[in-house]
Amino acid sequence: MGRSDGQTGTSIGVEGHALTRLAADQSARINVLGALVLAAYTAFILFQAWQPPSGTQSIVGLDKALHAGAFAMMFALAWWTAGRRWLLGCAAFAFGLGVLVEVGQAAMPFGREASLADVLANSAGILMAFVVCRALTRRSQ
Image 1 (tube, rainbow, N blue to C red):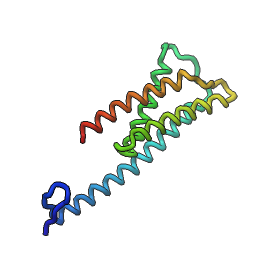
Image 2: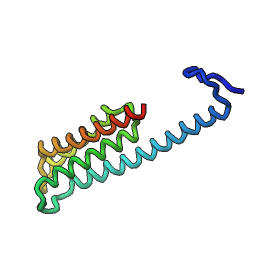
Image 3: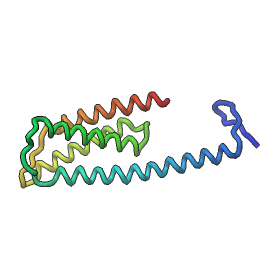
């Protein structure tokens, strides 16, 4: 009761079809989980970014490193959720969110300011994650 898969010419039994469906179902579950994690992380970033400043930082450059790390994670979560074909879309999503954060901070009356340096730090993190995810995508093909 086998059939040819049409691509490699190999025979797939009825069990193979059930396994393919099971893998697709598991993939859909992972995407739902990814979407939930991405939404929670996005809410966390927005909440943190739009709070009054917590004080001064004692380590020079720590703020920019935190921005890069936060947006590298944002890109990685979006990529995990959307799939490997959406690298540019995930980068655009993360970059747009970073710009939204800075625009929101510019409108805040309690000590937050928009910063081009923060947008650049966000972009550096996105670029680093993009390079890593692209390498992982190419490696798995």
